[in-house]
Length: 239
Image (cartoon, rainbow, N blue to C red; front, side, top):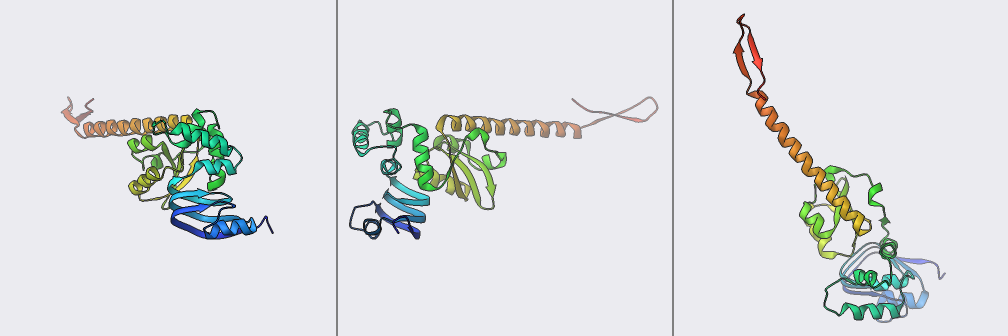
């Protein structure tokens, strides 16, 4: 059955290549022989190039977004080669960013492709309920650096919205800082950046209000007691 799928719970290795028609690895041979679709809980490695594969978590230092876009029909191999030439200009930009800037794809197309590949949801950040306590789990500097916003918690899992789910180092830092596993949602970059600014401003305002309340409470405790004409104590609150 060419529409059936093969399942591997976890796939790991230094260099992982799963491409139909290629040889040299077990999964490549499986695709070449049967045309089956490979489903995995997670794929983790240093260099990852995957086609005809679905995974809930893809973690790697060099996941090839170009191959994902080609597989999903958003990009041609020729266009990818052209974009890779542009990338050699030394700007240090990630391939996805370069493809969008050069007009090969839209940001939404790139996010849709990654959402399909990684089995995560593409959301409108303005429509997502946000737990302000969850937001505070990630320091503002880290949230702004990696463009990540925590929006909810359940047990040891932190739900975060990101624009680049393939940022191995950024998500690794967030995991280390929070000590929590991450559940990934995707969002376009500009709305996400605006949401990060808004919710951390809200945290700052709340902290200022809490501090003001503490000061007020301290002053209330320093009540001045005066004697009235009838010797009845009069309590005046100090403003």
